[in-house]
Image (cartoon, rainbow, N blue to C red):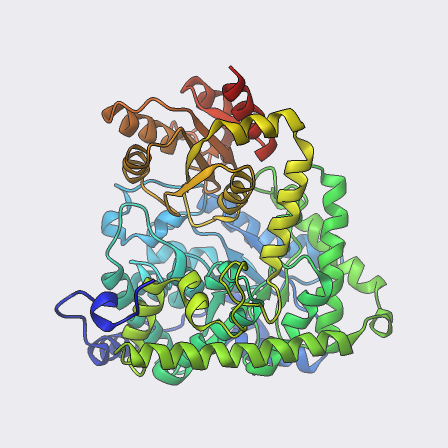
Length: 586
């Protein structure tokens, strides 16, 4: 592992000037301002931050609903219907998270030529405005706005629609837009967008989902708090904005989930955005998912009641693991959450807050050490840590695993994921290990033996930023003595095919989530054929796509079409292993 120095991190002869970028973003604030929407006018507030502080002072829980259908008309309808149906039952939804399609991250001038996922596509700033007018719910544009090549134009459109909570800064560190490798340009647009928000006369919350950023890749949860501190340094101190944080996708352990909430409260006084649902525990059974839904909501409800942090609670519909939930299913999840909140009054005395506070203390101490070591190490490497452009781009290029290896807060320890003893073991790691154990226990011993003895080399990739499934596949294969070649996250098919050839792979394993399964496989097949590479392809995850004929804006299952292209379409990792064993024994 070579030592870091500026020339390795920034080989470019010249980089954009941060002062110029900040000035450009601030100048845009003269014309790009916050527009009116029913949430602001009917609640009599200037911003979501003001609303959150008011709700916290009154002891009110806040709830967050997530949607974003490909059809703008259906998304507009969902905006009013969810609110109206919950209001009819005496309940309130405080904020909506809009699932923009990941292709929205491209500048509008490039968007039509780029692949699309399953989310909402807004063609113009007027479409942003039209979306937020249906009910007095806070509009939260959380994904594919800040941190993408289209950061400035999407941020301006979100502001005009009345949004005062915009993200997702976490994605900047981990998300690569397919067919787009200009990280210098993306960073420049991100800095300008952050400056645009910071220059508004009212407070704009810069949302960062930690589980979409580096935090999900650390083996030490204390590094996640360190990431919070570093992002606060960049946004709050260097740019003058206000960053707010989300977590929750992979926090299955209730005590650690509560401890992390407490740790966040110790390092920031900014109201949180939302606590996301623990989606990694969701399965195909709707009945079982109600138990999963209750298991994390109970912790979040009690956490907000005993220490309000302003986070909206996110009841994930029980159909989430299968498909995009319908409007009625989102309403059902919120009815369930509100009734659960009513019935757990008095439960506060049953939880061990002292144990959670102890974890919080460990996380904060470790997080502060991590931040100090990162900043000191970057300074030694020649990075100007007072320059937000250099700080953002250097961290992105170094990557989470290397940051933790070099500057993690734990003591050195051979044999751990990053050769450091974790201060608090990351819940992601624990969950992956538990799932890996379950997968290996579910396959027959003779199948495991056949795979171990086959001497396989696997080329593993993901079609998009969601890499939890990819990591699970890699973990299981490595435990079966398969040589795993990492082809990257959000990897273009030509790069995957090239890597498979170069490494002599025996098969390719693709994890997909964002609704491009069929198009991705077609292109990958073409790229492999061009290189005369004929090896098996396994593809798993959400095997769906929006139909090309425009007959529906809802993604449909494409398993049969994938199989027609001679791929192994696997609903589970176990299914892939059974096929691998059969090939080995053939």
